[in-house]
Each structure stands twice: as C-alpha cells, then as structure tokens.
Length: 143
Image (cartoon, rainbow, N blue to C red; front, side, top):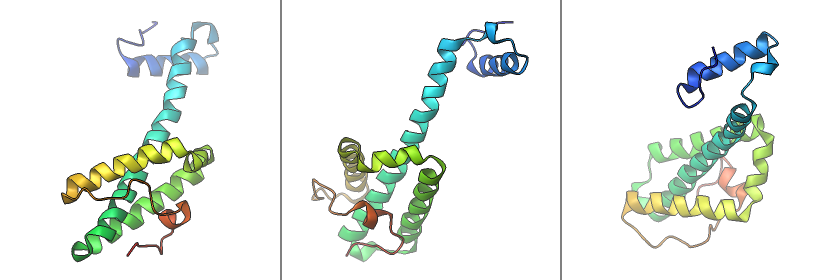
C-alpha cells in the first residue's frame, strides 16, 4: 500500500507496524520512523517541562499570595510532584534535565510567566530560590 507519511500519519504508522510484524523490513520508511522515535523522547521532555512549570508557578503563588492559599493549590502542587516522580521513574534518562542549568532556566521563566499572568504580580525572583530536593519534596511549601 505505501501510505505517505505526510498524507495520513496514523495510517502510515499502522502500515509500518504491519510491515515490521510481517518481517517486511524492506518496505519500512526508515527516515520517518527514526523521526517519530525521536519525537517520542521530545514529547516526554515537553511533558516534564510542562509539569515542572506548573509546579513552580504554584509554588510561587503559594509563597507570594499567602492570603489565597487553599486546598486547590495544595492539591495541584502535590499532584504535579507525584506525576513528576512517576515521569522520572518511568523515564530515568529525563533525570539529567533536572541538573541542566539551561533547561531549568527555561522552565523557571515559563513558571514566572504563568504565575505573573495568574496573579498580576511581577516581582518574582529572577532565579529559582529552591533546590530540586525542595521543589520535589511532598513536605515543602515555601513561606
């Protein structure tokens, strides 16, 4: 059949899987398969980045809007920590991002932007004031 990758990626993926199962490796679209495999890793990185930004934004709101603290924020913080823990356990290679200064700066910038948009405040620290251990600890809530 040879469905084009750019025409219908779902049909293409099903076709490629069928070729593999049938042992028809000569029919595989190797370049696009390689690209899709790389995209899986990028998707996992984006998920971790998103979860970290949400977590950090809520920690900022917790610290800077003490009068608005509530169960919803606490639950969001706890949930993001739990999901980050699962993500790092399921994909241990992502742990290296937690020590990547450039990545952490990017995530912190996103978190500051989210917190600023949601609070109307613009006086958040330029550099994250918490360690990774604090950020991921279920017991830590900044004062």
